[in-house]
Image 1 (cartoon, helix red, strand yellow):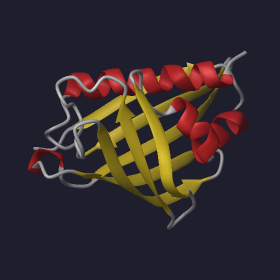
Image 2 (cartoon, helix red, strand yellow; image 1 turned 120 degrees about the horizontal axis):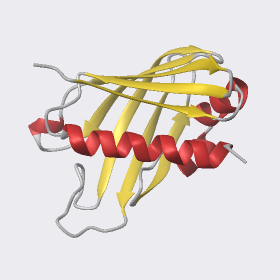
Image 3 (cartoon, helix red, strand yellow; image 1 turned 30 degrees about the horizontal axis):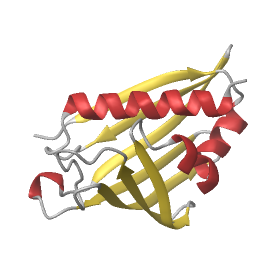
Length: 153
């Protein structure tokens, strides 16, 4: 049975600034890695039909938490749709020898204009069974909080 995870946060910034932070490598690498991780892009082409490879590295490797190596998660991301200022749809595949992390997770970032700024809505469908719901929720919340800190005065 597939699982869908969702998270959202009101960001006190206009949609154009938020969209830029969702689509530029320099901004993404600053806010996307959740607390306790660092990120780097090995390749980045965010456009309809584009792709990127993202490697997230754990700062604390006790317990060997990584999906790809004991201290890292690597993913191949295909961009299936970009609607400027509104939406980004991606297909994510984690590199892992563990079958619990295999499969294609479909992610969507949506921007909704709000009186106080922009609500960022994140949805992940077909989340691999190896990603615990609680861990995913914590990671998504951390990334959204990082985005707010990156954009808000």
